[in-house]
Image 1 (cartoon, rainbow, N blue to C red):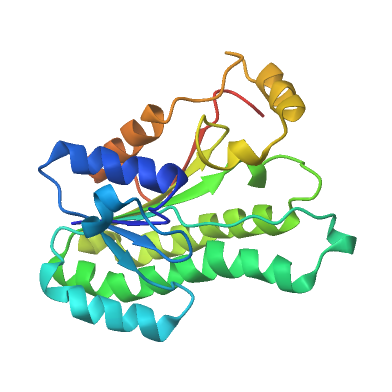
Image 2 (cartoon, helix red, strand yellow):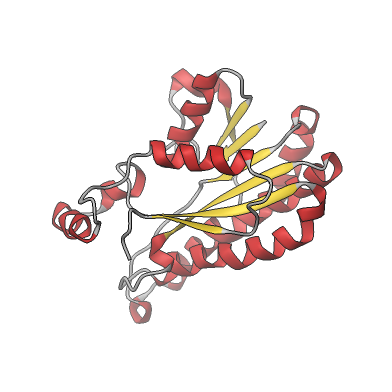
Length: 228
């Protein structure tokens, strides 16, 4: 069973549709504020990942269907502001959704994975946490937080056949790049050796690799086309 958060748009939606097309995978997409396309509506569950009680109840209601679990944490949010000008509520919202909500679901799924002695968790982090981009303190902090969290969880669960890793994504022709003005997109492309944003198929290939690998654990893999 593959569970994908943030599955009604961007990278999450792309991955959901890819796995559905394979027809040999059971897939559930989680969404909250953005409704899914009607074509794929039957594959979705509405869930507020920040509401821990709701997450707990959802896990209990789905437990009988959970075997060979793979969790792809794609849900995320962004807020751009210089640190000294930040609205603290907006800043905290990014940390809550990108980091706390991710942990909420991991916390409830881990006992099932441990009992079955098998599991894969893949978090989607970002190059933004590695670079010096003004205005991104909330997003960078939330994505960097995934690294330390994953290392600790990897150490706790490795003997149970569970791996947890991060994909540090650069800029791809999908998702949040649409929010970047064209003149800044040109600047970014000029810093990438190929001169292009990434094809999302590369993300799918990396996810497949991590699903099939049992010795890659607690890692953060850079996928940015050489942009640093």
